[in-house]
Amino acid sequence: MTTVKAQLNGLRMSPRKVRLVAGLMRRKSVVRALDELSTLPKRPALPLAKLINSAVANASSTLKLDKEHLWIKELTVDEGVKLKRWRPKGFGRANPIEKKTSRVRLVLEHRA
Image 1 (cartoon, helix red, strand yellow):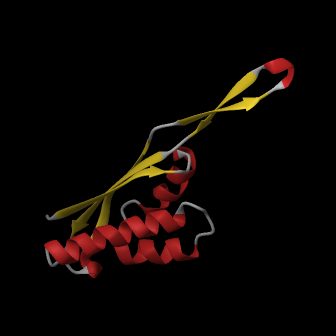
Image 2: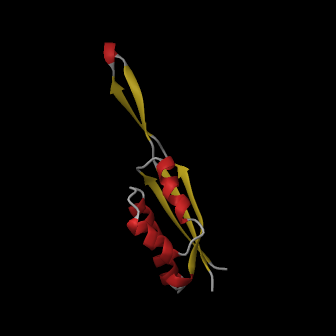
């Protein structure tokens, strides 16, 4: 079975929120996953759809694979780098803020 990989680094959304949408897409055909992402009202839906379209473009241009026969084999969401910021508080103190990012890895599989 032929596999195609695509990766999205530094997505400025927390991994916990991206995993909610990614869990719906695992082990589905690419066509069905893109249909569901187009109607999903969650914020991570657009970047995940762009990642799937990028992987499909990689598969069709390099390996000449058809979109209808591609399935999502793996879709993992890991924690990326954290942007560290400070918020002023009372009495001259400061509280840390961690702006989380996500790293999404996608593997498509060709099934005839």
